Image 1: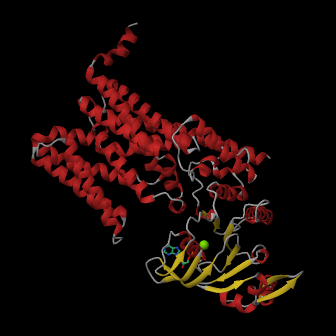
Image 2: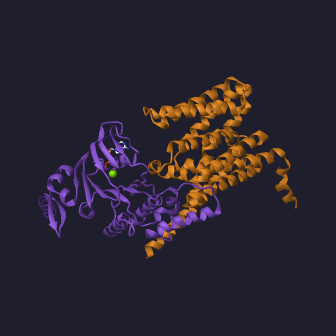
Image 3: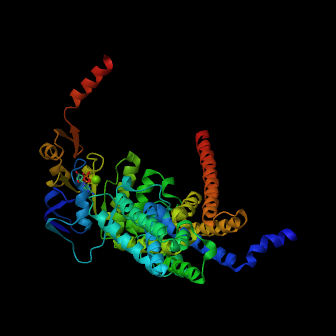
Length: 260
Length: 283
Ligand SMILES: Nc1ncnc2c1ncn2[C@@H]1O[C@H](COP(=O)(O)OP(=O)(O)O)[C@@H](O)[C@H]1O
Ligand SMILES: [Mg+2]
């Protein structure tokens, strides 16, 4: 999939501009940037739900895409069970008892694989944050995609859940026979917990600021241009760790506040 | 023995049997469509469409046109107009519905005042009249009911996907505008054929009550989809039967019966939730 000089808008001024980005088969790409920088819009453009006003998106013919939205956008009060969420993305066959049974087996298999066995009848609100995330991952996987697109899959989850989600995604990305060889594109806020573990990172703020390995991309110059705030990068066991600059000054001010 | 005979007495009148059949069918149909009305927040559209239909029905009565042709054409035109005005985004959809359908309703009232002889059938649309139904009305409700059931079962997954998560549905190959149009057509047809039974002033309540009651009883979309029409049919049938004895317009009794069941379900759910919370607190 290739975006060329792509700009997108929601009717007004462009929200993202002049984006050039290519995602190849089997890649695992993280997109990082501050909130409001247009990450979700970029994903929507890749999916085709937002059309570029300039430039183009080209997808390989027959490429199957599946999308996992940010869990914050889900209506958790909607009356729908785990099994119904996963099943809704399947094409509907005529209601023969036999096909209904094989359909249920298919849904249960995907849930089992993601560690959600036995939860088919549960309402989506009666799950933990990590389980909720995986239900929507299951709905995407049952479509047997070549490329999986996830919006902030680790926003608002704890360290253990983030680990779980990452491991599931790594399995899916690994090439056969061990994994499925699915290309993965995700957005994240989490520079140290997630982004620095990925093979390829894109720093994004209205356009592509930097694109490469974490070591190439997680550098003060690019980070400042992406986040608009100075940052420091340390090396720890060969991995970059990003620190916010000005932390000392902030700590001093806060401590002064509690002292007086 | 005498009591038993007395309870069955209304069934010996054909107009009561017809009324009971149509009230039950109308309740089931409104319950089915109501699932989408409630989950998609379309109740104000339903309210508006029923008022628009009133204007069309009054016009049809004055011009001596067939009700289904007059009111159906008028309802369709108002629906399209609402869509056009609200897509322009100059005024909100709710304001568009308010202006267009209230104008239509006012025209109905004016026609009613000016041409007194048409009063009877206009009254029927306003307050509902279960006892004056013809076989053609029963056939119309049954026809729209079968059509709705077939369409909703056939498009079950797409309708659910488009309602629950339109953005992802759109990129997964479901045409969300097409699903919206299908539901709009079914809702309009439902209002058209049931409004003479329930009445303009009460129809939006019958579109909402069975579905919200079913929602309180289940967390599953699939179960809600059959529970809501069953509840609607019970409200319709029982309400109709009670209205015979209470000597109160059937539409009102149907809605009151539904409201009582809703309150009972709401209280029961409240008790259960409180018990669950208490259970959690003890751990
Ligand atoms: N549906 C929409 N309609 C209009 N503006 C939008 C819409 N979605 C996002 N925007 C605007 O586009 C900009 C980028 O948003 P988004 O892509 O959601 O950023 P991110 O995902 O990085 O937080 C924001 O300024 C936001 O207000
Ligand atoms: Mg976003």
